[in-house]
Image (cartoon, rainbow, N blue to C red; front, top):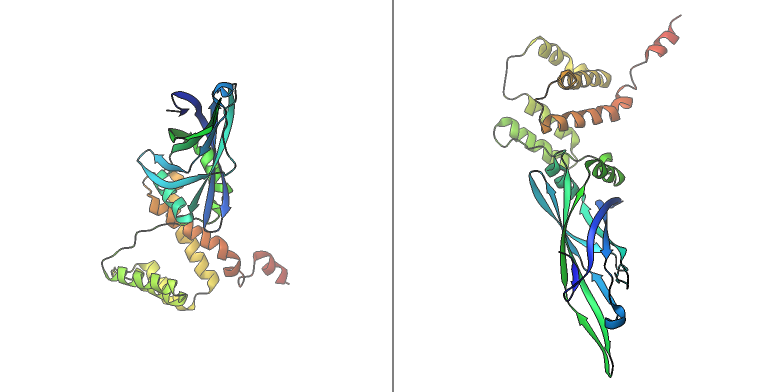
Length: 291
């Protein structure tokens, strides 16, 4: 299907490119649609102008699709086919919140992505006839197009909008049991800014259900109140390394939640490493103090 005036095709979409730019609370996707313009007999019929309208965009994935809303055309983009074939371009901007980007990435699940656009234009034709005033004819024309976006290109778009600088992860919270109750209290405390209470509630959640303690548990619990921040850092780093270790040995059973857990733990440990290590003298410092 193509844009047409009457029975005559005047424009047809041939491709598109996707760019990105950041904005407060999300990102803008800039979709540049390339058009093939067919010659128009303007000497006999007068010039014709195609005024692009907002375009509904759907993101399609291997397992489904998401409606992303309407992309707005650049107000200055008016297409006017000449008396000879040529090319043109229409610039659309689609605003997506951070939550919408998260929904897209969750649905994409590491796979390819394609944008299905319903391209609508209002052709305005000015047809002068001898002896009569100029008449204006306006009629909508619709063109539907599916644009494949290479995975590497989409990843570059995500990076350009800063999506990879702050990753939002979604974890399903348990809803039954004592541990779930403690975890719910932790989330509430976090939202209210009571961070110490949130950490305490998480600690209580990890103590249920009761299980026999091993030697390691006894050692840690015996000294946990006296642990320094540096020692806590070492325990957490070791636990994260142990959890992530099978991935480097060919293990393929990890789920998305596993990856989100390791990313969150690693990011927190890297950010806090300088603070948690500050109280621990380095090996070079120890050597310098030796007589």
